[in-house]
Image (cartoon, rainbow, N blue to C red):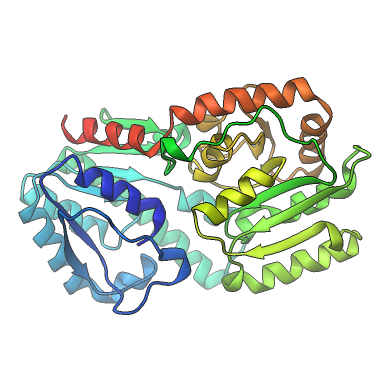
Amino acid sequence: MHFSFGRVVDRLAARFARVLLCVPLADRPPDESHDYRLEAQNVELCAQPFYETSLGGLPHVVAITRAYAQACRSADAVFIRGMVPYVGHLYALAWRYRRRPCHWIVGNPVALLRTHRRAGFLKDTGSYVYAWQDRLLTRWGRWAAGGSFVCNGRELGAVFPSPRTHVTVSSTVVDDEFYTRADTCQHDPVQILFIGFPRPEKGLQYLIRALPLLRTPRRCVLTIVGAAEQFHRYREELERLAQELRRTEDVQWVGYVPYGPAMFRYLREADLLVLPTLSEGTPRVLVEARANSLPIVATNVGGIPTSVTDGHDGLLVPPKDPAALAAAIDRIVGDGELRRTLIHNGLATARRLTVDHFVDFVVRVLEE
């Protein structure tokens, strides 16, 4: 399964007698982005038909509802991650079997769909309507079943207000993955790193536009790590933009890199990480970067201000603002005292945001 959830499942399994995993099952080898193998031996599978998105699960209403019913009957506690198909059915079953779900809200699809056109007017409108009904049913379901929300960031906490709404920052980092160094930006060229799926809501066009606006006399190279196969048109647009700005040689595409030693190499060889995103929950990569002693620049959107304190453990800038991105990068490259402060404080913040701290938080909510 995906690494970001697999580690959470393994750690939940260490805290409970049994974990019943109610997820879609693909009868095939995992693709690169779902390459985490669960380690816990007390995990049992309650398989749903395979689907890749919540919309993709809509044709399987009977089988999915049957799996939800089995999970709610068999479990003492119900933990829901993110958006799921037929969330109203799931909450109704939780109410029927007197389970109080803990729902982990990881992102804001309504805000995400507002950032840009994705697939044409009709499909975008349908997706927007679906996201709104999911939000409303989730709110209703929590009230009816008496459950709790665990929200990635204060923005989502405000979207899902309730007496049992808890705000947090999720992570997959563990203690032995930290890498300590006092400083970066000691060699030329300066290595700027982006990690994430290169898709329009990540705002990479604004980061590329920032490159010619940099005032530092040192050459800066942007390395983009992330699978772009599903968004090849967007990558082509970015490559044309880099060519127009005469920065083709300064933008390097790596492709998908799995979390682990391969990813750590990029994090530990870079000088700073920049996330110019337009919509986010609390991105894991911002914790991973700080855990590897990287100063960070990110946009002041979504749950990012819950994870990053501007000027303390990172720099925050407005979205869609190449000039602000360039100014923040220049500050980090040119101001050694600021850079070392961000690195030091970033490490301290990341140590409070490990996956074990997150699971401890979830378990406390489940045990309320």
